[in-house]
Length: 439
Image (cartoon, rainbow, N blue to C red):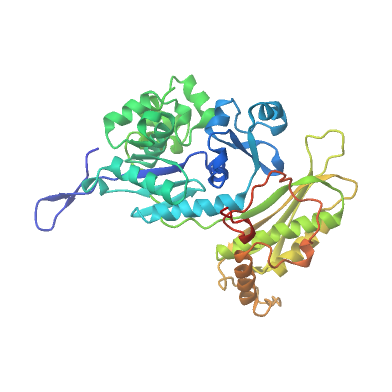
């Protein structure tokens, strides 16, 4: 890629460092986390199940080799699991989040800028780094450090745009000879990889959109890059045009140094078994709003609207069906869990209908304000609870040390709605009692 030139006050011109993005992606992340403290599973097929142990949401390379697809219901592959001694784990989100934080912290210590894209992916800005070090050597060192310090294997793709970096990472994962690192800063290498990459593997395209592209004769990433941009924009969208430009090496997506503020917070769960009483529904929703309030305070926001929803199983035709949602608008935005609990309890009583078998419920917080910036009505008489912020800060601090240290009575200690997690691994890194002991 040609470097852009910038004017030099002393005369002549100086070249701007070549822009370069890297995408670092953890390999089979959930399955890899489960293997961290179980060396006996190193070469065994491992899958991680979704909520209520329903479907396969993560698979080790050995499990993929057995033909287990993403989203396959566990009950449909029980014979395969027994035949090949497949190790099945319930989703251990506390473990995965902690390992993810360790990975991201390790990367952050080696790169100028980092954007955490998901629990197992991050973009890094490596612009100008190629002038002092080989990009492939740097990426290999980064991979080695993450594996040594955290125990998680990664792949690294580097390119002048984010979309090409994603493509490079795809190549690093797919082709073993790359050693887990692909440098696409060369236009020649970009075109070679795009020529053998199906268009549905391009970031943001997917299978549904690729069918329409295939009908137009666009079957590879290279054909999309070479397509007429006006036609792409007119036939599809400006978003796909931007993707095509990125494939051409034109950077349209900048680094996000600060994660965007959430516009809504949703916490919902499918129940481990159907519940039929208002008491059980209120207990579940109370736990959901407590978690949502924690997230709200972490974002530094207050919410003015609270929504509660509940439903039966839409796929079970042998029982009566019911689904409903209701929302309450507060007079003043709040982040106080106690106030939000009072609202959700009233909404549950409004929604609940006896005689149904409820299988899922949830809460949603919206209409956010920063603390102290909302202008109340002249006639508003609602006053916030005294020392609310201080109390919530203490609550969060204690629960961060160990989840569930403090809880509200409405959450109840005995419940019949909790998710099935019969194959849950220990909280190796977040609970003292579960820390592995050397023998």
